[in-house]
Length: 442
Ligand code: SAH
Ligand code: SF4
Ligand code: F3S
Image 1 (cartoon, rainbow, N blue to C red):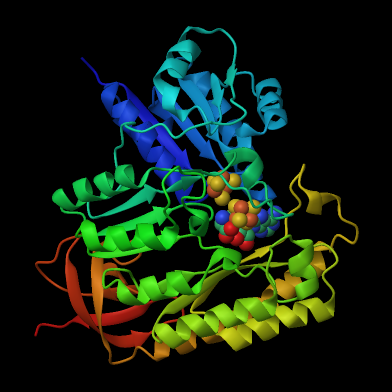
Image 2 (image 1 turned 30 degrees about the vertical axis):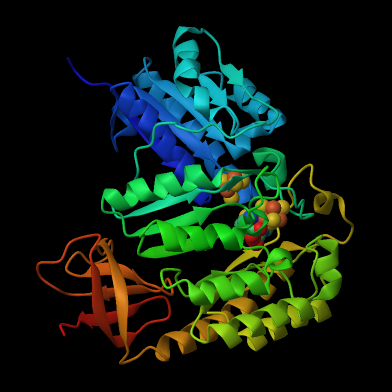
């Protein structure tokens, strides 16, 4: 019998990528096969993101095009899930504007996806199923991972921080931690199957454990992952500067399998803006934490997220961001123009910044950050680094691509190499976003 096929597109962050792996796990069990060919698929799923308006616009455009495909292939089931449709008003708007959509479900009911799919197949009209929150963590869901050498491992779900610009707490619910034993068991199983790297995932990993009956914090969890599982590379994201502390720095310094990379989103360099953002730290406190990290782990790569054009941001506030970027000298930064999210406090703040000014500030920030990224890369010239091979490069199939422990991309030629191997590469050429190298055989 012909196997049913599905096409799955993921927007947004690693949480959504990891959720997509659960969907793939369910679909494997249901006998579906993944296809790139959405036009002829039996099932098309969009796992959506709501963090900025652009992310939402992309999804609306895509649903419109799916409508045309469905006219030619009326049996097709279209499902929209994830953060964007967890907003009830958006889910209702989609149902009204695109009545051909079969199923809309949110971030909290992923665990009953097979049941929702059956309901959508039987229903004449769009099935909307949204839960307002998930009280507990559901363990034991199927998973079909994207890679067979590196894996995302959830440690917390949701967020309690309510940064004033951010939609995530509204669409991902309250913070919940997975039990340490469940996390450790998952990682030990990955090691048995040959995995080399895990990334521990949470919106704010530093608050891990606060809601658990046993006494454990993130630093202690990290120590256990390092000491008990045998995984070669441990990464984690995202750390919140407010909760990032000396205990964690020392844990990172001591744990030989914990990668020398910290992603610590600063968002802004002005204390006035940080306060309006409800971030809970000052630029001075942030700089102190960076100094502490550099003292204990001098070669640690540091990356960040920055928002430009937050409501009320003056030229002076923005200058403080540029100054902080210069002082810290980040290895890399994800930079965003502020995007008002309906329902968040910042969207209602006065003095919204015009797009032209946001663009102009963004360009200045980008130029400054590029200089620092390049400087950090240049420091690696001639050095030998450990690289986890990811596969052939997407842009140039004649070279391999992989990541250093500091999370930098390295491309290099070589024979007899395979994805998932840890190799030593000597850096021979510098580009702003990547490095070229040659395999070093001792
Ligand atoms: N929990 C993580 C990631 C949140 S979303 C953290 O706290 O860092 C990833 C990034 O998107 C944020 O760090 C922020 O820089 C950016 N972001 C979030 N909301 C935004 C908005 N409304 N406009 C522009 N950028 C935003
Ligand atoms: Fe959003 Fe702030 Fe939570 Fe990160 S910590 S997800 S930026 S509210
Ligand atoms: Fe991630 Fe976007 Fe949701 S950034 S948590 S997928 S809103």
